[in-house]
Length: 468
Image (cartoon, rainbow, N blue to C red; front, side):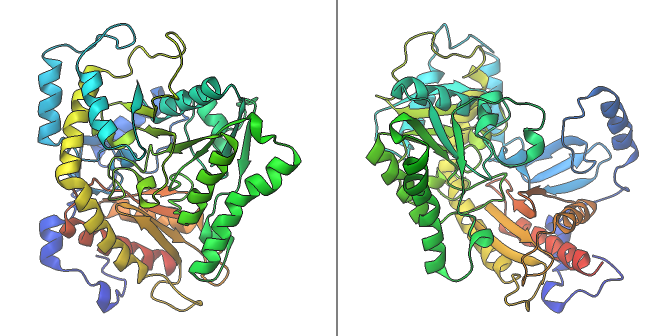
């Protein structure tokens, strides 16, 4: 902890806990080996990559990463919510090694192998909508979204898609056309795929004040805008193929909408023969304490996209649809590498671990973390941490919104970035999301003790940022 900063008694850490479960920083950051690699990287790699701080990874186990200078970090990014079972889970590694010794690739586009239906059977049993289902495998979340976009247009014969402000669906051209998260993601890449309309997502902290009733009314109003305004002015509903929505916005700020918003989207889709696509790329695979985040609402979608945590770091994505919707003919859509056998083997092992223990752990540890974090939120300008405006999330998908002050709710991206940097210096890996929020998305196997240490570090960083 900082030797010069007064830390309130409530956040003085348990020294033994930090010794046993905390990070171990041995050098200045970046260390000499890391600095040398970063210099080589800057000379050779695309400048389009976004690197928040100078971490150079050597190895990882569970929730811990070691860099090339032997510094040990607590990883609360999980490779952007990808390493769901932690780094190098032994069961996942064993599954990868076993499959790699058999065959590495035999394109599922043209040939058959047992892993493709085996994984589909497991995923079908976990689907948030009634079956039967059919599946398409890709390599990334963007590819799953591209599949869903094309499938919706193919099946309905309609051309228009409705998406939401703040959404992130990927960076390939179709997925990017649906995205509305940051201007830089779209700058100088137009024109985009036509037929996409963006409407407001119910970001309650930024959209209304008041209690749960106000939030419900706001959420319902965001959904009703589609039917009450769009469909009555310029967008014929019979020409809309799909509405694509994140049940919890990821890059947009880890925003949890009121349930009524998603319930009303479902009703609008039903009334007009529109497909409801749910993007679970970041929120799925047990992260929220359920297999998919949409399950918290009881809403049943028509198409689901998943990736990130589904294979513990191996490149795999899934587009799942009600079987009658996936009615396109051979050659309509395909991928050479999608459904790679090594990635599918990792997926099977990942599903087993998540179902057996990790999903329940995400609910228990995540809910306890949210309970502690919510005590940080200032109310009416007076509170424990006056720059913490909002805490929201489900399971281990948690957003902490940083503001200049809680009376005006003015976004504070510089303060947010300062907190992320301070945490890195102390050995805690975090990422921002949205304009001014911090995301907590550790591996689903994070221990309660690791969470406690991480929140101690984060709270110290919040205090330092607020007073400097």
